[in-house]
Image: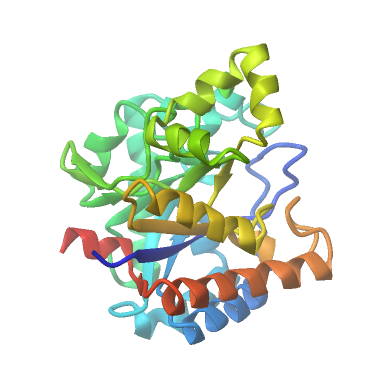
Length: 318
């Protein structure tokens, strides 16, 4: 079975991550830099999924990105949905200052009717601007909940990218995905394609064990002694992303997952990271240039060295 790679860009508004999300955060000034990255990825033979939130799809800047790649929607580009509840109408959960409580930054924590109406507004807006109804969904902060699947199915979605393998966000009132690996699976009428993560360690035997038993890393974080041992073994969970992860580490991540039979991967990043000082991952021009080059070089390595195939998530539903 061939290795397959989906490149998923969280196309979203800009905000100061240290100050938290607010409804006033609507700017999308990184559109030109984003198109430079997408062009480089397409030249590298990648297929790119733009998971777009409400400010992105509603802005002139976001619309310019869509217009540039609209003609590739049947081949190399997929326009998907990405729900950031704090900037997506209706805004019933907001505080008086326009902020949102931590628990409600995960859309799956909202009441069923409220999450559905936000999803419906976002879906309709994407269809209005793009001309095609999205079939792939990515929850903001990976925050799917108990009602999300039924709402997505009702709105015509086929594929969900919201699971973040090996990760536990329960300490922030978010979902616990620690028992999920990277395998694609079907449930509740949806195909789930987890965002790729892996555990790397200086001890290959333990790395292999931790990746085969996805909850091990999270369980070790709950024990002070095991946490210290894990640090000595240089044990760390990595997301397959150029944000805070080197090209070499991304390649090691792929090798670690191949050893347990994984063949399908998602390379992801947040769109504001393509412009300096908009996220913590790219604080200056040097870091931004490195992110762009590492993303492109990883795609070329995946295709040339591994014989990998680029893919769009929507292909899973065909």
